[in-house]
Image 1 (spheres, one colour):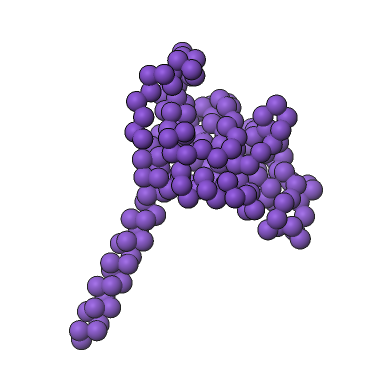
Image 2: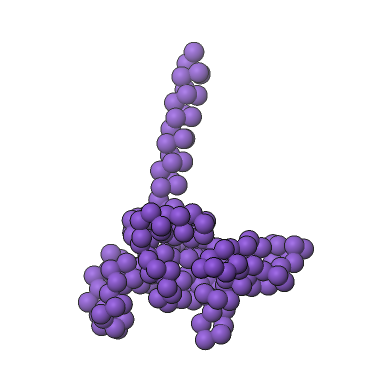
Length: 183
């Protein structure tokens, strides 16, 4: 009986601990889920273009998107999409279908061809780099793609700049000079 109670307690504790751990990270959605959510209640969109082989992408997920301050802000103010930039998903968006015609299943766990959606949204001056976080407004218009790994301190002002729509009235340099960082 004591073992049964102890097992029940450990199971309950482990389950609640796992839930807490999940709640500290960004609640990612698929592209289709974000489109549906956006139709119900518009807000900015953040798309993390990552690849399975990319070390900085994994660091961004672990160090930045799992940071409680950053995750909470993203979850409250954005629809967040995690998108495999070299994956094989077909995405219907804005009357077009984006695919990866050159996708090689034999290279599913290594470098592959960039997805058409990656080329359309994540390129900066024609170059694609991973990770790239693309920020869009509530009308799915690209505000800016930001390439490379960012620490929580680095990404925080960008998140606020976009969520508060400060980009409409203030230059980035001016905004960052008065930004009150949490870090």
